Length: 523
Image (cartoon, rainbow, N blue to C red):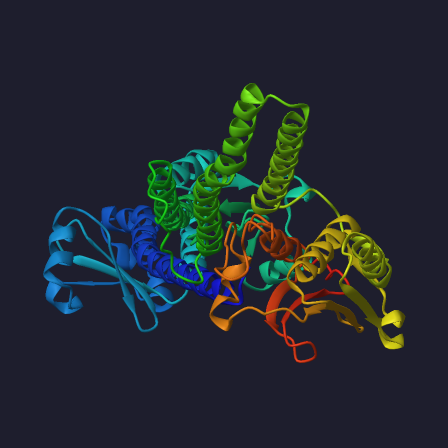
């Protein structure tokens, strides 16, 4: 994975995460502001309607005016908006946020507006309701107290029960507050506010209020989950769509190549997820195009190369049919045998070249002595190249680094092709030298022949190539030897070069490849 692709992907994921967080924060604050407003009005509705139903709430609950700002008046005295006034007219409870808490308003029996102010809405609501419950229970006869408690519980949406067991009592701190004021507010594990009230005759009553406002209610969690899931789904869809569009490009190019458009290539931006796939695909397409071109050239050249020996064999057979003497028959049979040998050598060269050109032979490099192979080739060529002085020069420094990674059989074939080719065109002398060091292996084969013109240096490595002044029928060869040499060096990670010999004046062919196989970059 490239660093550029990683940084781009990281930046996009970070941007998506930031966008999700921003959207969630905005939704959380916006929706909770509405939910909180709704909770305030719903929580105060039972109390405010209870007060509105009282004939004279200011006198009946006189202690609420100094403690909670209970007051009444006309609508204009409260500075309410037109919408709030319309809601009051429908019998609704209106809650408005103030600088020091919340104000709650409702229409009374006489059409006046009742208002109450709570600095800490939930806790002050618990105190107000508890004091109202205590007042009603203290002023009710003992025989009717249970009915009054039930009526209060139903009207004010409360849970009122008499403390009969010690397990129902709160902690010590709440009991100490109860001793001072006769009222203690505390909370339990469910976060609901509870008020412990002591009546005038000493009985203890626990008043449990509805739950407080929860900003993390299930609607919010469900909505945020839906938003996060939706954003991730959209991001995933766009990412898959991006990948699919590039894969479709690769698919379309593959279809075009299958139809015969060998020059079709994938165009992909650098640093994308499928850029490496596009590069690999283009490399494969280049290789296929080159193989097809080589195949076409090979078919054309092979048909041309086979035509001559086949024609000679046909001519020899005709001569045998018309031959009258044993000497003529033996001469024609000897010529046919030579032509068959030539066909066999040509087929061997073609098969070797095809195997090297179309993906390389199946072999693994192993350690072997380069100098031993050079000496073996030189000694073999000396036996079959009479009249040519083939020299071998290996210095002590090269002997030190003689061990190298290679496939001995193919390196032997490459050196043999160069030495045999040099001996074929040499005037009388060929020199083979080794230059080995810690990193590379280099073998030079030089001759004192006519050499090769510089403009033809690359042409000699082309399959079935023949130079006007060198490749002739008398000198032999099919134009595949040097192509095989270059492909062998290619599969060894090296290269074959041709130049001019400074020592002998003819041609100089050089083989260069890494002495040791490079380590696997994936390990």
